[in-house]
Image 1 (cartoon, rainbow, N blue to C red):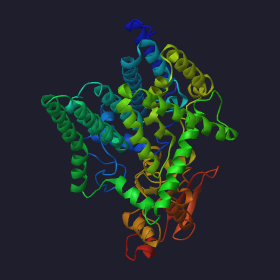
Image 2 (image 1 turned 60 degrees about the vertical axis):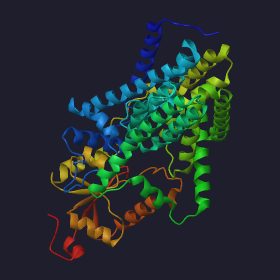
Image 3 (image 1 turned 90 degrees about the vertical axis):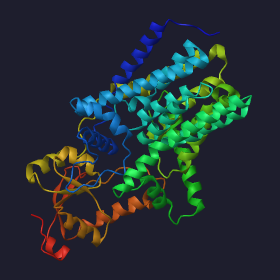
Image 4 (image 1 turned 60 degrees about the horizontal axis):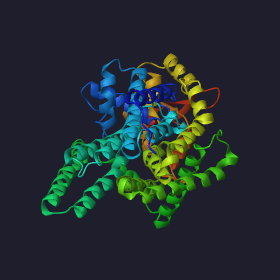
Length: 497
């Protein structure tokens, strides 16, 4: 039996969920994931009418970061532009996800179960931990949720669906998993349509959607190539898998599936994370994934697009040679729909509400109660740099966007390692290198990834001339090296002043 509530009561409940998520803002300091610092800088650049980071001399246009999320952040950059303002804007996108999920579920289940499903999403510890972060997963999820709502029509309006696909890709290229879902929607609708006129309508909307969906990636690629860049994801895949063979793909798939299952099980338990629970969490996660798939297959008529989205997103992440916890966010709406579809209608709202309460009881409360990590780990190193180096001194660092924000000095990325890399630093006029060993690059290949090997090579090279250590943080996390004897390195009179 479907229980109905007044619209004001439902909106009030959603507002309470948004306020709960506000308690978790910010999840960590700006720049803790480095990409968030890039988005911050890119948004400010767009507000100035350009698209470059603006933290180093002679910077080329920014071609390895799609402009969707920076463009959506740019209004906040124009209105003050402080990290706090942008974090509140990012939180608003999370609230939008809550509302869109509620609308999507409400069309299928009614009021009570839809509110319980929205609560299961909003109060989950993983979702709460991402509240207010300047990362692209949440806004991309909001656009994909809008696309799912459009697909409740027969057929989905082609222009709106295609623009959603383009925008989702420009925000987060991993949203390309929504493209097969849209293609399946139009293909299956065309096949089921009766009569020539109905089929022509499906074909027309599909063609419009395809043209609009292709516009975003094609226009971005054309602009990037016009300024000497290329789509970075293609190069990353080639670099990661180069020369490894088919066995590496299977290894990556197994590693990512295990990590995703463990995370799904862990955030569903009313217990704080502990290493000894990893195996049990992995089994629980596999069971929850199976329950979702069974529910979607059980109700294919109402869950068709979500089933295609789940399949495409799963295949993409199984073959992608990185895994971060934030990747699981893209699965959440479909997981909740599948779990609800697997439950009897009479108990659906109660079970989903109980699951939401369990997820929030310990881990969710811990996220909202924690003191925000507002100070970066290298705060002492940044203070030393500001006090002991000239304002124009040029630095290089692996996490150069984050470091530029806090050190208030111009920064460049590290070049490829080796003696040519040292000469490249000298030619660019780099005087210092700020070094911190990244905790986890997220590669499924671990220490055997190309990026880990490059970092290891640089770590060893900095210990020898022409570098000398001029500062070491008390806890050893940050070190500053000065590049000396530059004329001997470059072979010409170009010493760094």
